Length: 156
Image (tube, rainbow, N blue to C red; front, side):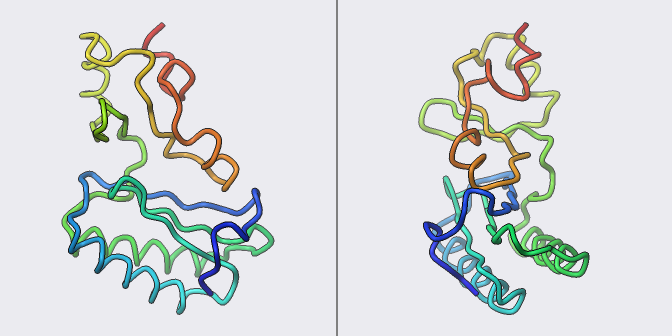
């Protein structure tokens, strides 16, 4: 059941999928339709979604719900199908997403390390934490400066 994001508690679980590229407007429309259909068939619990920066897919499900192995499998299959349909990578959370000016970039870790080493990225660049697990973390620590991120060891 799709619910209003504002009605979800801070402990709401979040499943985050960073895309290897920005989605085009026509793709976003299709993806929204597919996500709404998937959620309505997936669970009758308070659930919603967001698409941020035309590149991050987030699914929120109320924390009091135990997400079963079958629910995880169904969600994974749905995401895998989106990867195939749009020729993107969504399940690789180790690659780095960061802001460079107004743009969101997606780099493999080895390439990101080179950018840091060459000082093309500063400690002030905003990094996206792809490992968040709750609505609270999404709202408070999803976007953070490199110096405060899980990658801060690269600048020390």
